[in-house]
Length: 92
Image 1: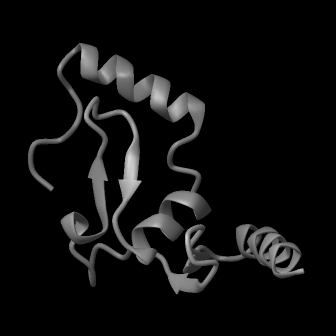
Image 2: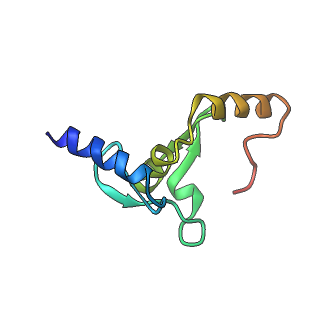
């Protein structure tokens, strides 16, 4: 039952302004990353290759999931950028 509620909330959230999301690890509703109020390194890191964004906190995981930041196309583009030394950024 909780899973169905979580799925329904995800669908509802995806159709609204992107201020909140659900942390896929805990299932809790949380604010999304806001660069004016949060520090990137506290909420995200790149995998070893640098193509996949990993959430370190509820805010990071919810942001990645809600904004679909690790879509296959996004990962493919990042791999191209890596090959030409344009990604990942050295300073955040």
